[in-house]
Amino acid sequence: MASNDLKMDNRKETPPAQNLTVIALAAGKGTRMKSPLPKVLHPVAGRPMIEKVIEASKLAGATQIRVVVGHGQNLVRQIIEPMQGVVCYAQDEQLGTAHAVRCARPEDIEGDVVIMNGDHPLIEASDIKDFLRIFRDEKCDLAVVTAEVKNPGEFGRIVRHRGDLMAIVEAKDASAEALKISEINTGIYIAKADVLAEFLPKIKNNNVKKEFYITDLIALCIQDQLRVHAIKATAKVAVGVNNQLELAKATRLVFKRKALRLLEEGVLMIDPRTTYVEETVQIGAGTVLYPNNFIRGRTQIGSFSVIESNCFISDCEIGDSVQVRGGSYLEKSKVQNKAVVGPYARLRPETEIGEEAHVGNFVEMKKTKFGKRSKAGHLTYLGDAEVGEDVNIGCGTITCNYAIDHKKYKTIIGDRVFVGSDTQFVAPIEIGHDAIIGSGSTITKDVPAKALAVARGKQIVKENYAPKSKETEPSE
Ligand code: UD1
Ligand code: CA
Image (cartoon, rainbow, N blue to C red; front, side):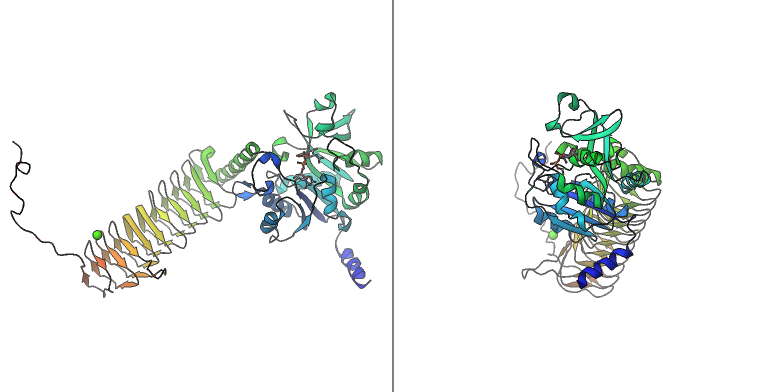
């Protein structure tokens, strides 16, 4: 009793007409994907399809997203349950789309409900808002989003009589005549919650697949004189992903959209068709992207930077006027203004490159702070290191950071140190500022500031040592 009263009070507070809940159907197997991964977890431009559906729903104002899960639900839950506003409902047996919606308990919902398959990665918040506006303006009880397509194939067909919506007929149950219809059901519906609660239980499974079809709701509600509308959308936006080819096409489209947005914002691109920037990435005006880059995750790039071809950049913070030269691989790193990285450089997580620093070809850094204007031009590995400002790291320098105790040790190099080529620093080790390391040294002991350290075998020269033989004589 008491909890019931509480519930009633809560209901009074929510404005019923504006309340929006989204039900996303994601319990099916996705057989046509031919992949062990649950269909809705397949990534589109780096993010699982279902995540994109959830995000669009939230941006469109949904207060709750109820996701119906079944096949592979352990994995699906792992990904989406931590997301705010998401609640999963199990559908243990896949008895059809109407049954799936019932599993999400529409009788507990008030206000408007958008129902969609979990495989609509191209849906954007603005699309959902447009559908809702029409639904509300037309005072609908139920609406289905439709699209005209060239190959209607397996889609449910929209049956009209003298232009008026009558029913949806599934391809498997359709007559030859109905199969010719090119207007299809996108699998997106809007309904008043009480309409769902009342009519879903009336749906029967007398069809070829012996499933409870949500599509039968249309004819049922029309027969009952409710206001039912078809909302036409563009095929591109509304059509879901059912196989790998459609997934690849959707991915292509998401990358294209992002590229166009960046171009609008003043980012320069030599070939937007081969520039792969995930939606979550931010890039400042005046930055140039060469072809064939893959820029991922939470990466932020400032203005007037140049990213040459074939770079992979994930979750990085890159400043202004930075040059990332071709073939570089950067993860979870920070590159300050005017620094130059690459060609063929690798920055592993927790690396920070200072202003105007230079990291050249075949240089790898991990968990390393590399100071302002310092240079490591070629063939170097710095791991767990702290390098000061204006340091010169000679070609072939290595920090030996990993010891036989399986622990990593730090190398600390002060400002203005000059490290000759082919040097090894056996960590833990500290080199004072302005010190000089002779090339070819294996440094095992700390070096004080301003000192010279050389640690290499002495050169021995023996004159006329070689045996006299024909081969060694210069030829005439
Ligand atoms: C459905 C529509 C069809 C429409 C098409 C658009 C029905 C009966 N048909 O067909 O008119 O043109 O979408 O893509 O609805 N699901 C569950 N539980 C179930 C069954 C399905 O959660 O018991 C989920 C699936 O995971 C999927 C979605 O519902 O995300 C659609 O199911 P599916 O059986 O693939 O329907 P379609 O054949 O695509
Ligand atoms: Ca050596």
